[in-house]
Length: 315
Image (cartoon, rainbow, N blue to C red; front, top):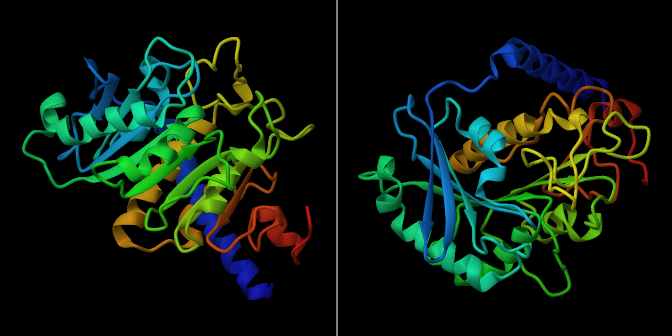
């Protein structure tokens, strides 16, 4: 890679790092976050929004819960997603009270009810009908959500996969018109095979608007031990715990979602947009793959250290 390009990207990192460092002490959620649970025939939901922003319902993000999880297990992530942003996060559980979250029929039923009735179910959204709709899913809801896509009454404007599982490339399809943002891991944890999770969904997605952020949780890395349920408040109980060393991840996920929303609105998916500080820290904390990048190779720009090492290398 030419020296001039390397220098330019390092300068981009410096600007991003300064912005991140300046705001690091102000990430505590404001007191204007409103949260409310609801119970309908198709399932349970809990919404979060910031009452201080002009239009909290400008973007509506539905987040399907993972295996053994409920709508009360994603408070931290949801709060970070909406704090100071015109986003409402609605955590949904299509099979409440049960361990398994794999049913695409039940997932479609709950999503369809929510997406057609949110004006009544979420009072702050009344009178605000033109919205960006995002569909997100953690763990098993990822499989249910992808398989449910053909039966959704309103196609989402973007899809967010939080280590979705089980994604079978041989039998599953992703609508190519839907941009995707996926978070996953370099090492299998909690029985979630990395080849059937976030990486697989990224590989199924359209090469013009796909993003894969991969946490390096390999042995002896700074994220060694970080696992599949780090997106939740307390891990997945006996199924899959969480580690304090991964406490940076919920905020980074929220920041990437904000960038994803901007990219969808502008229809511009540029690499520099998604250069989170952890991608650029020189410690291989987080790898970024986009569009034409192959996650089975060290991408043309997966992290700052891979950039400085130069040519592409086989993993």
